[in-house]
Each structure stands twice: as C-alpha cells, then as structure tokens.
Image (cartoon, rainbow, N blue to C red):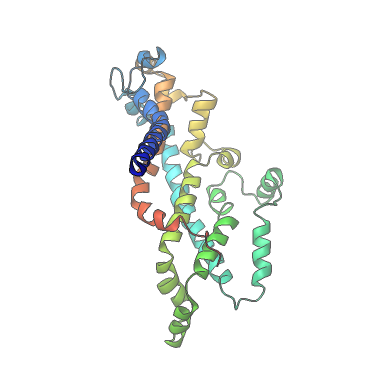
Length: 289
C-alpha cells in the first residue's frame, strides 16, 4: 500500500513537471512556428503549435537587412568583450577580498556590499557619463557596467572555501600571488567563474535599456535595441519593408518573430557547453565561508 501511494505521488510529480515544461517551452515554440509560417496564417491565428504554410521568407529578409546584421554584430561585440572585462574585474576584486591577511578587508567588503542596496540612481549615473564625455561611445557599455558587487561577493565566498593549506604549500615552493591565482585558484574555481560568466553574458546579451539611452549612432546599437523598436514601437525599419515584394510576402509579425529567434539562438548554443560547470557552480555562495 505504501509503495502504491508513493508511485501515485511520483506520477503526479511527473505530470506537474511535464505541464510546467510545456508552459515554459510553448511561447518559444509558438514564436518559432510563427516565424516559419505565412503572414496570412499568423494574422488569422491559424498557428498554434506547428508552422502553417512553411517558408523561410522572414529569415531571408533579416539576413538582407544591414541594420539587423550590424545590430547582431554589435551584440556579439558588447557581449564577448563586456563579459571578458566583467570576469577580469570580478576575479581581481574577489581574490584579494578572500585573503584574511588583507588589511581593511572587512571595511572594503562592507563598502562593496553597501552598493548592492544603495546607489546614486539612474539620472545621476547618466549625468556622470555625460560629464565624462562617455555618451554615444562603444567603450561606455563595456566599462560602465564592468563589475557587479553581488558577483564579487559570490566569487569571494567561493575562493574562501579553498583550503589555505594549498596556498601555504605553494608559497613554500616559491609561488607568488599571481602564480597561486592563475595555477591554483582559477582552475579550482572554474565552475563558479563559468557560472558567473554565464550570468554576465546573458545580462549583456539581453540588455537594451542603457544601450538605448547611451548610444545614438545606428551603427553602434545592439540587436536588442532594434528588437525593442520592432516590438514596442512596431518600427521595422525602412530597409526591411521598402520593397513591394517584401510587403506582399512578409508581415511585421513574422519579421519580428524571426528576429526574436535569431536573437535567442546564441544563448541556446552556448548553454549546453557551460551546463556542466553551471550544475557545479550554481551552489556558489550558498555556503558561508
């Protein structure tokens, strides 16, 4: 009787998990199917799960649109270079803070933690960038958001969990702090660094708000700003819809859906390669060091 109740409970859990998975996946499947369907099928709400009147016209049009391609290249530039800067600055801040011998360590930790809840605000931050002559420059998006206090504290906690005896043994063998960092701490903390890097990369890739405020030159804006204009303002752009053929064979909705899919693909490709680190690194910071 006990096993029967346990089996019933397991089946109920499986059903709930399957329903949650369907609810999570369905919006993506709908957008993908709509991007591969004819404009008439999308407009008449015939698309529910599978594509109707299957075609790649929207994707062909996207790869002919120079504005979208430039935005795509810019998104890769800001994500790759920005994430690299994020990891370098975060490790540089977390490693010294993990050392008990660092003078003023507690005070610096308190000051860094303080910025997680209290900051100057959006308008003073924007005015500060303006006064520093950093508006409409690519480098602003890279350095102005170069480090997160939250991830510094997370990585510091992970570094603290590494036994001090390993560091003492390396010092006896003549290793300095840089050697210890690169040859001992970074390899041991690889899952945590990969997880933090994934968080940074996703944030960089999906971020559009500050890029929209800071960048005015169309050649510098990332894909997410273009997507925001397409979805919120329904501004497709002249190049994508200027020809009569395009108007006849495409609709704004299919073009938007196809652009969304193109924007999601890089994160879908990256995630399986980082998943093995993500499973180990997801617990970083959960144990107090």
